[in-house]
Image (cartoon, rainbow, N blue to C red; front, side):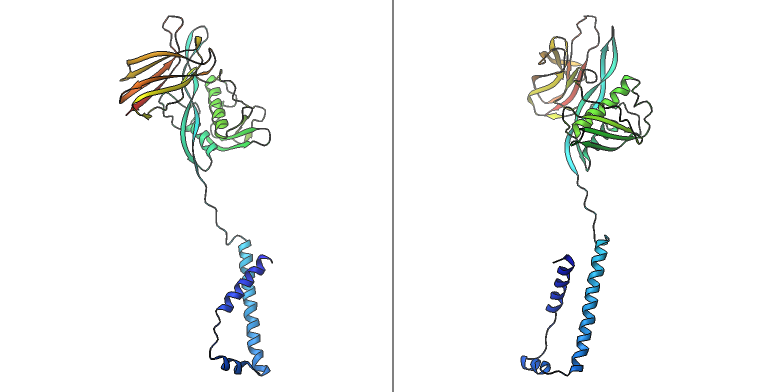
Length: 319
């Protein structure tokens, strides 16, 4: 039975149920026993006309429904997730001498959106990091129009951007390169792409199909020392606190300090990363009483000349 037939049957049943006969059974029989032909013709014609109106009305309603008159827009589905956003932060590069530079740091953000990958990339471009040492290297006014992951095809994530993008595609400077790399890493993490997935960009409607960027091993873009288990401003319980991070340092040495008031060292020690000279995990545990502290992790100045070091800091509240 078609949808139209089911609707018509239901309507006829509903109409029949609303008819209530009057009088006793004998009276009804006497009225309906042998009615004159011409008295029956008029009700029959009326019933046929009513049926035609009903059928016509149902047909009109169904046609109107097919045209979209009875449809409703589905509610937008939002999701909440904690995602990794990449920002630039202070770094030290050594090309014969130490010089100030930038590198990428990871920060966990809780986001709510109907399109989490697009929101995550927009956060990397124009969001506000929790750590005041971090920043975005993108120009103001850049908008993320779309983030699409072709998981079943070539494994590419396409990031469509619009706005003032002069020089970004060419990556003429290290900061422009890092700006792109921050989006690459954020987008790949946001869609949970595999290790071999890459990212291509579309700038103001023009696809840069000839360039695909991958995660890489982090030697070019990631900070040499990072604290990854804490977010700046985080509140933690008093007692033993385990701090985790990543480091690529000489002989895997990582120095850590606990500061009060921004510069007074109240505790310090050192630990070692799992490997030397490549990004590898490290951790240490420190016992803290209630108060506000700054946790610092950094590499060492092997020259003995007081050179600046690569470091990451996190201010925390212990309760």
